[in-house]
Length: 229
Image (cartoon, rainbow, N blue to C red):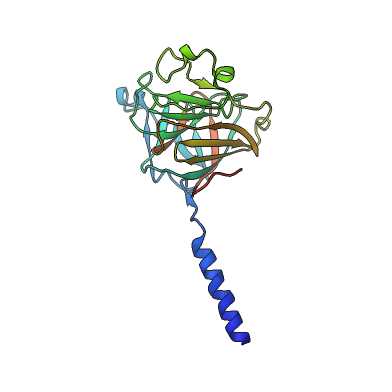
């Protein structure tokens, strides 16, 4: 009987282990395998160095020349964890979700929903030829006639909190959940944005080079079937 109980416990444990979703490390800490850069100025001047590199086990966005590092694969229904910090002077960067057609905006940005990383604005949504809805749209986005995702439209949906970012030099942690056409964003455990009725539900994931040097020590993805509370 004792041996049977032990066998049942081991069997059940194996089932639970196998049932857990597998974490995918999008950045392996060694090189940029699984990613490709899209940097428009490098088309004009092939001698320019890419703004994306690996340094001391971290993925680094140097900020210039401006562009994006894009996953080779598309993803949907996932929890994305990103740990980042500004290397010195804080500035601008972003995470692109559901990225698809390249360079549709200002001949630079891919069609996507951006989760903003700009200092003191981290967690904003920026709509880039895709769109998303939040519960208090007119309060947060302004007059309805100005909404949109193209040039000249109000594409920004500000985040829900103040002071969720860590001081410059400390590590910030984004948790971004995408399920169907819904997106929830936490920054350092604060819920900072929550949108639904997104015009896309899958695509590539991107990291910007947008003027400021940013270090990333972790970019991982886990498939999900429901959103966290």
